[in-house]
Image (cartoon, rainbow, N blue to C red; front, side, top):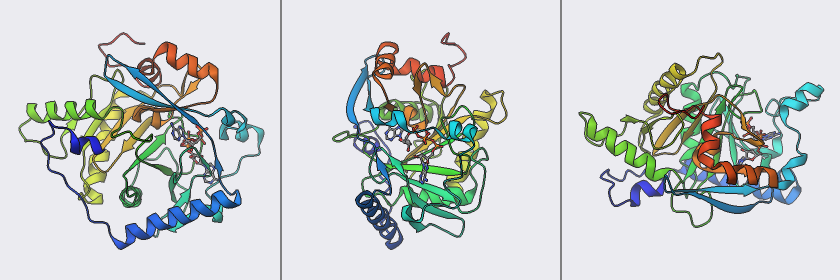
Length: 323
Ligand code: B4P
């Protein structure tokens, strides 16, 4: 997200929201809960080594997090089949509670984190992960996104092929940058270029709210610009428009898609598969970061390339032949 502000071709104004007391309180609650959870073994941090993988065709470098220890963590689906599954968010583990975000949502620390301060915006009552985000969901996640002092990325995995494992509605939030020293998200320049082109083609100047698609990426995506001063209802309205576009691409019910957003843009990606070979991909793949659990997975993504992996689990543009 920093990239949109620092890129020399960027013509948009810098829109910064002031940090409010509520945001400061939310951030402190995340840090305190994380510190206590780490100290007491209430959450599990997966040690990873960070590697980078570049694709010169799109001039993008993604972040590989190699986490071999995750091999032993049972996936929720297999636990469900074994009959031992229970909803981890109802009731939630009180040690992981950061704060109440509203009457309808709590903020929980992710129990199985790869990066520190990874949180989950969770509905207090059971709602399905396959239901669209409501304005109360957007209100809670928009407030959470804005409390991270260095910026954050929210993501939502919805539908059977989206990489989700828990059926109770939750949006996840991780801090930025994705890796130390990274000044912007891996596909940031591609998104920005697509936005500038879309804005130039349309009547409006470079206004937030212009919809665009990054055609340089080989998977179907729909995006729009946001800014930190937008209201919840504006963001929700933009989300519904992206969801409608996404639904037109997928002949399946329930719809599988990933949603990614920062305070500066939002992108929806329709999904057709959960994995490419041994590599399972959730929304973070489309943000340009992959969690890899074995040498087999590392070899697979290095040999095939991350764009091909994303095209397999996403959907190719109609004109391409990457079926
Ligand atoms: P889902 O949407 O259902 O699934 P997911 O993100 O793919 O996570 P999954 O659980 O399948 O984990 P995975 O091995 O792929 O989200 C469920 C969320 O609830 C997860 O964040 C899970 O950890 C969390 N959770 C489960 N039980 C909980 C409990 N009792 N209390 C609180 N939270 C609970 O990946 C493992 C983790 O690494 C995930 O958190 C994932 O988001 C994260 N990750 C994956 N790729 C990453 C990357 N490149 N960089 C940083 N983190 C990454």
